[in-house]
Figure 1: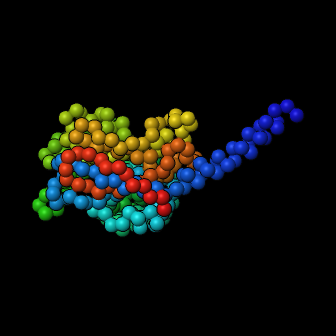
Figure 2: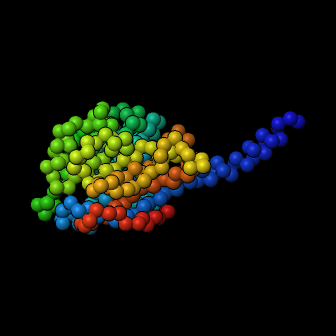
Figure 3: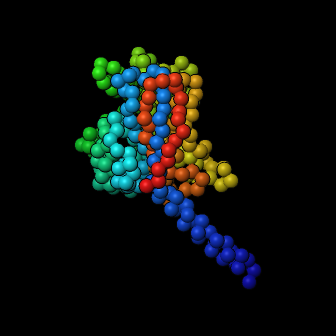
Length: 266
């Protein structure tokens, strides 16, 4: 009989583990947090920001978006899609996200796997504003907030001109799909909030180890950094030790800090 009984037993034991990993990858988790920033203009106090990245092949849950509710700002942090995801599915996701509020998009590495011209037309059709190494001024009651979007790590894409432009505003945010961009920002960068995804938190972590670090939110000097585990998966629809997530932030004026999260699974 040799090793066959042991291999068969191992295979049977693996089945419930794989089922659990598959179920975990399909969870709809929303993390709600209040973050305080000392630079935030008073007109933007109590604003709501929804951040979601790495959707890939998933359909964004209507129940999740109902929990999100109306927002002042929606940011898609890249990898909205990947190869073999239909543009009709992408359109449905975009329509659902834009219903939450004004929506901005930065490119991820998988977003180029479909026809870029058709994809850009779809972004325009659904009213999504693309930020490709550029920024936009958000204005409310004559007060301004600057939102910058980068495409690739800085040595490949983001120019000093954009950082210099951000520095002319009292409060600036930076979104890039790739978290390594945070490390490449010059030490005097002006950004108060940094948002990214890409790593999936390692997606499958065994004994705490994975191919990439787990996602986090933390304060570094006067800047708040988020690296999200992301909403979807890449290659295998499985997760272990790196739960899927999306984020709603309530922005408050005050000493830069992060309140404890409230997590919803819908």
